[in-house]
Length: 218
Figure (cartoon, helix red, strand yellow):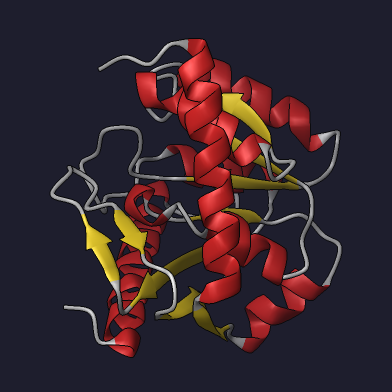
């Protein structure tokens, strides 16, 4: 069912409230490797990469890392507007486009944002999959900017994982959760794009598996 603009505003408000509630009630453990911790503690821009099904708690992970300004690439698909409105409650800037629809327009907009400073965020398997497969947009941005790509994910022991294409995870309050950051990935001018894509995809999937294992989720 397609939501009206007014309905989307209400749903986005509720979703943002839910994320904040979870941030308070879930017993979080954060794991950050030292190279990533040094980057997050600094002021240089970074590129966040996380799976579409694990995007709900990324605003919390970003805030807990002490970062405050990020440009988030959101798809031009129908659910992109709802996601854009939701993360807007956290003060995040959004750019519409994806690795498929609006890809060229989105990349141009992202490059323009480089001049404004701040971080960038991608769901490399969005907006419609294939799930857990990195599309080339994030690799292209990493090469063009020279910014490190930081994989990040979360998992919770309690919560519902939907039978959607992205296996979206909705945590429940008062459970145990983990936020896991991965090692930085650099894409240099001479780096093979396909090798970089495959390496990032493997790292992101391994990071998600480790997060699920940490909290006892199958």
